Length: 635
Image (cartoon, rainbow, N blue to C red; front, side, top):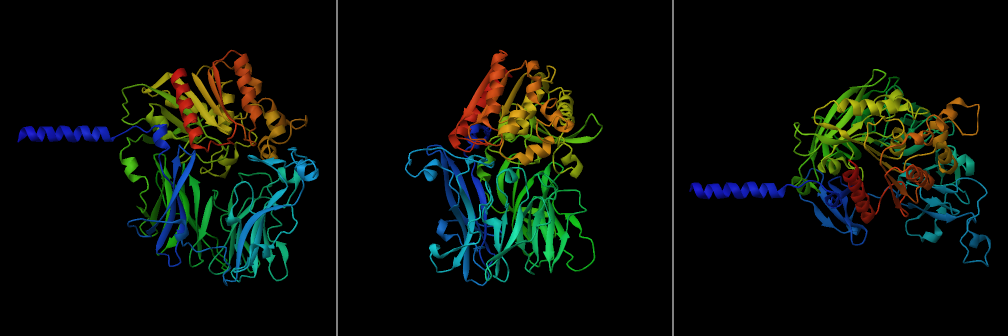
């Protein structure tokens, strides 16, 4: 009997050991990706899509499911069986909205010179000639509406012959247009600017189109910054998100409500910034998500209506996770999606009374049960100006404090995007830690979730306090006995890539290796080629030829990584996307050329068909493979 028990115990221990794996790039690209689509008309069933990377096709396969909102067994369905209420049908059921591209201007040479149909030139006389990863081609997204049973050819363009976009490019969708509750008007988002004005401004407005008169009114004309995401309450009040400062894409994002001609800012006195929101069913409050202390949490704010009382913002959830979207309100609960650094998105039900979560979907639960998880720690580091800075520390699975580990300083992009409990398929801390690296991820200056001032302090100071913040974080962790001070690296993309280039010139032998992806290397050529000029104008203070502008001159000289390249002495991997028009190709090529001519060990990883991100599955595996190969060689 004892022999049987011994072999059974041995079998179980071996089975458990074999079942646990370290996360790898290959396993990461087996993780399923959930998108919540919405509820049925009765509010009983949740519909969602699950996309799985397909390495053979270099794309994604999708399946559709429904599941009871209170949890249960999911049922696979076809795409046609997804019965989410169609927001684009007018409330009276008579009309349907949709959008499509409309050719308005002749830009292609074959459109200008009809006999030269094989020519492939573009002819531009103004800016806004390209955006994100696409060249301007004279076509504009427009909103149309038609009677339910009419042909698309009978649809009416609500912006006839207007050279403006709605939905907004590059990421806008049908959330950019909504029906008025009385079905008599359409509200839509557009930035009605052209050329240089479009490239240098964020003045996006919300417009009201009257179906009967076919006239349009700008309802946010007084505001010069962003006005986005319109949504009506059940009582007919219109809400939207607003940033006040023209040209500042990372300004404080407030919740505005308009009713009976009276406009109220519900979050004006709250020291935070809103990410997304949803009206409560009764129209008396708004639920929203916002970054706070290195996470993204649920909040609510009451809507006082005509009452002369100040709105009150209340934080509803708290914990080491990100609430990434609000799907729907149920009875005394919210359906949301949630992530953390070890788990991709799943749907949860948040109890508004108990303030706790119940997981509804389990798309990747079985997969993660076989993975050894890294440990995530939260600490606070004192900065050089005596502030307390949150730093996430991600430790390898089965971490042993008696050993020494190579350690990576992670520099977040943005520069004003939250370094929260996100789950990335590229900058994935779970994969990095599982390869034996400690990750140090500071919520340095510029991060939302620590007050409006902390978020704003990075503008016009790219090479200033934020660089001290990075060094404070890595120097603090370097005091730990388990950090190998001879094997420190710095990695990052976008502003994080800029940070790597800049740190390479000031780090004073701290780091043994660097990795920069789509980073700004030369602020002058960046200004000359990036497509969203409002961003660099706001963050750097203006152009490089204005010699009297001391703020801008600091950005183009002292805070320019190229001005410190003579001090580069450390191996560097440079990654660049060929279709990245935000941080264009000359940035990566110039940095690589400099490193090579300085005889520094360096490598250029170039993706001709990728933009600011890496989206294709096979390219993603190449990215991860080269990333860890470089670290193995140099760290």
